[in-house]
Image (cartoon, rainbow, N blue to C red; front, side):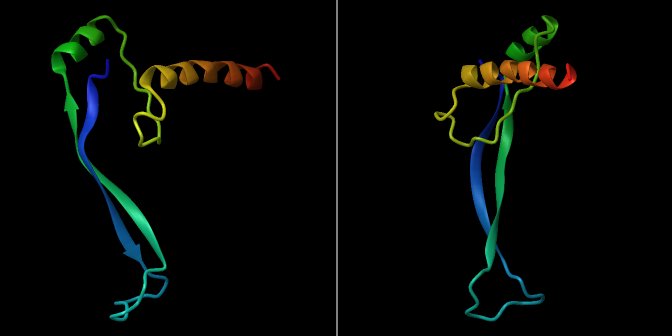
Length: 91
């Protein structure tokens, strides 16, 4: 169970131009940058219980689609990462 999540997210596209100063009236943007706005929501009771058990840690991903990688799969991939990192130390 996740006890902290980002709620009411909104992705805003902000147009950018290569030239300096105010763009011409009909100028098309050269590229866009994106900002994600939202707020953090936490279940404090669940969080406190996990902290008392000393079982809290943060695992994050850049994948915005929650259905693309379920939380248990993110954890499995995180744990598998240790095997790769250990291989670099052994050399």
